[in-house]
Amino acid sequence: MNKPRSAAIYARISSDPTGQALGVQRQLEDCRKLAEDRGWTVAAEYVDNDVSAYSGKQRPEYARMLTDIRDGLRDAVLVHNMDRLTRRPVELEEFVAVCERAGVRQVNTVTADVDLGTDDGLFMARIFAAFAAKESGRKSERLRRKARQNAELGRPGGGANRPFGYEADKITVNPVEAEIIREIAGRYIAGESARSLAAELEERGIPTSSGAAWRSTTVRGILRAPRIAGLRSHHGEAVAEAIWEPIITREQHEQIMAASATKQAAGRRAPRRYLLSGMLRCGKCGGKLFSSARGQERRYVCMSGADHRGCGGITVAAPPVEEWLTAAVLYRLDTADMQAVLTGQRADDARHGELAADHDRLRARMEELGQMFAEGEISRLEWKAARDPLEHQITATDQQIARLAGSSTLEAIVGQGVALTAGWEGMNLERQHAIMRAVLDYAIIMPATKLGRFDPERISPVWVL
Image 1 (cartoon, rainbow, N blue to C red):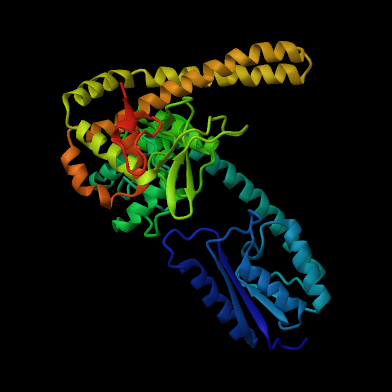
Image 2: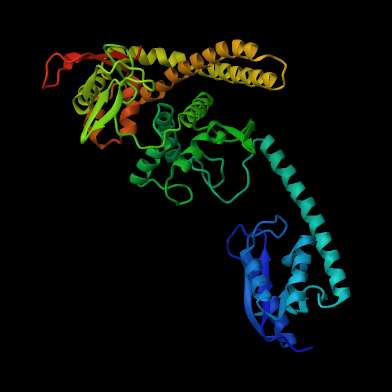
């Protein structure tokens, strides 16, 4: 048999936590020596580092090697051991078929005398592949049991990435990052979007734990993670008290999850353009005013029609009413009235856990009711009669939770009216809206009596109680 003149060397290691590729380097060195001893010419080396051969995930270099063999570019293969080539019998059969069609019969290993070009060698390779698959399955099960046990004991999980808010040991709280988490948690609960928070963190030059740029998904991932509330999760479910200190309270974690669910249901994606969206009411019919531009002019309008159901009788230019209500909100923050509101909301915060439990219970009853209807246990009339009061209770509970959400923002802004006024122009619109929402319940806009100029008498604010 002729000596190969265009041999391939394949090396792989399934786990490389250091990123130094030392395992594959040793494999390559041994394969090169074997090629030299046999007088083979190596044309290319294919390396998949930190990629499992058992999981079935794509191995780019392995796939490239198979393509080169099919195209006739390689006439032999060297691998350190058969389990480096594959740990799945079905994949071994695919590899053998590719080699047979390409006329490649010389496939050798360093650690064992296995030659796929012979019947005996192929038989031994199949035995090795079956044994490797069984051992990988056992190892995977051991790792799954260990991961579950660690979670139930509240210990940190594996992985090289450091969670934001904690040091590399995943236990010690990083005080600087923890303060950032508390800040963005309060603002998210108060209504600010993850997109807005990510943009500001990126602008402030605050690094993520991985060094990547801030994205809305990054912010949501940090805030929704049970670990920052001192909970250990496993497959997305909190299973135990964590051994590390929490950064936020359990109540805040529940508020974050409720706020996230509300944002998902609303489906809001476009950047906010109007400061007072959803906060103005028509002085004639009581309906909501909607943002509506006419050319370059931003306006709030009571819209008629089936979709909006307003009277169509109120229109107000956006800039002057936004400016007037902003000044009123920032002034109110420094009054004794707001201190009283804050005291009351601190007391109300203790009810959040109870409200969240009520919400989950009502949702579960709604799902059970739907299942009963789907299975024919109740009629449509019975389903509707039971559904309507449940929907009413869920809406009422959601409204109570939303009212409590403003307390986190108030904690940070009551008594800070002067400072916030100075920095107002530097805030993004989401942050400004969250502050307005925490103080102002809504404002009634009355019909215009003085045409041609802005009249503050048209505005009647209704403050958060």
